[in-house]
Image (cartoon, rainbow, N blue to C red; front, side, top):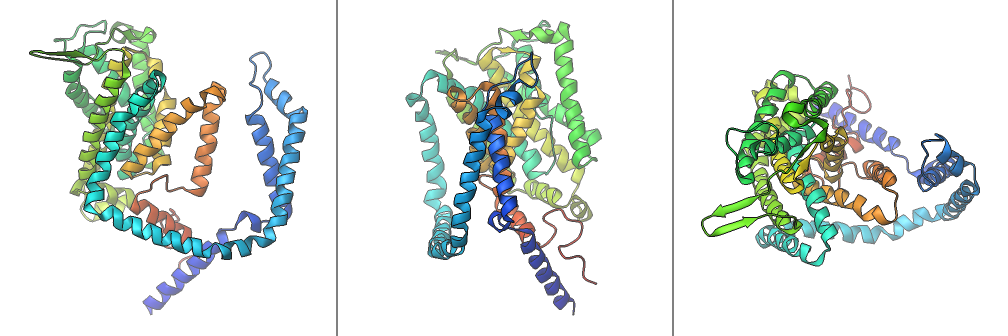
Amino acid sequence: MSTTTDRESVTTGSALAKLRTKRWYQQPMFTRWVALASGAVLLNVMSGPQGSRDDVFFSVDKTLGSMRLVWWLVGGTLLWGILELVRPYFGRINTAFAPVRAVSAQVKQGSAVVRRNVAFKYGAPVIGIALLVLLPQVLSTFWNQVLVNEVAIYVLLAIGLNVVIGWAGLLDLGFIAFFAIGAYSTAYWTGAMPVEPPIVLNAFLVIPVAVATCLLAGLLLGAPTLRLRGDYLAIVTLGFHEIIYLIAKNADGFTNGPRGVQGISNFKIELGPIDYAWDLDPIPYWYLLIAIATILIIAFLRLEHSRVGRAWTAIREDEVAASATGVPTVKFKLMAFAIGASTSGIAGVAYASKARFISPESFLLLFSVLVVAYVIFGGMGSLWGVVLGTAFLAWLPQYMKDWVNPNDRFMYLGALLIVMMIYRPQGLIPSVRRKRELTLAKEGLGDADAMTEPAGGRMS
């Protein structure tokens, strides 16, 4: 009897889930026109002139009170008319593309077999690293700087935050605070701060010290707060970032305050006859960061499938059930915070050594939000997705610099994120588990979409 009831519940949930998913061309005609007209107005504002400090409504007047708006509305209406003419043929188009979808499914199945192949499993990373090593040789100095300062540094940060958000399911909005701790640790131990350290260290030797410092900071943050969940935990991490930021800004005698710290030592190797220093050329830093990122990725891939990684997955999916089955949730959440923070500390050391100057304005809250967006865009829980998604989003604003106003770059980035979350919420390269959860949620099966009741209501 219970089996029949469960089947009926699943059937009801699937039917209701299908009712919730309504294609845009199935909406009423007037609704479709309003949507396209609203999109035209939005694009008109996005592509219009910048605002002015003297006139708050300058941009609005120039974009909404000119012929530009009329042309955008005319274009949107023409697009609506074309789609209305084509709409009756959508069913035939879907039928015509059925063989293509079948072939696509076979290709996906074949690619899965290829990924399981041993030669592909070990050969693809080697080829990828070789291409990354050769990449700076074909780029200009500007793009090599972008590779180091934007792509490589943020990839390290995203790898660490993926442990906290993607694997353990803990929303951390103050992750850049650990990045600041790593950078200021570098400035202190290399003798660039107003306060002299007990011993001046090489930047390479600062890495384990910065890792230990950030790990300790992660434990201090997590110990009193990790019994919180969701939004409450996010607010606490937000407060932690503000504490670190204000300390860096106001502790003039230690951090040099808003003036920042300059003259931070570069990475150096001094072993007998070997005497090499990383100077202004970004290419050596690129190779160094590739090596660090490769080591971290290998370590984290091993960690993901270990007992610790499975405990993080259990906590992320259902912390109450994990605790009920004997998983020490506080312990493993502390480990996630500590490991993620230590990775951010390594990125802080690399950034401070490369820039040779840091200030509190280098660690604004905006950067924490950006890293969170990079992780979600790439695919929470998917290490390769996080790496590729971060690299793409860090590169994109610099690519747009010649034809998009600097003040508008993040607006386009936000629009891209909105479109991504609507059409591919699992991310660029989703993890298998996350993709399955979202598929079940879309079909109304289970509680993967965080509903308190199963789709269709509970069956008595």
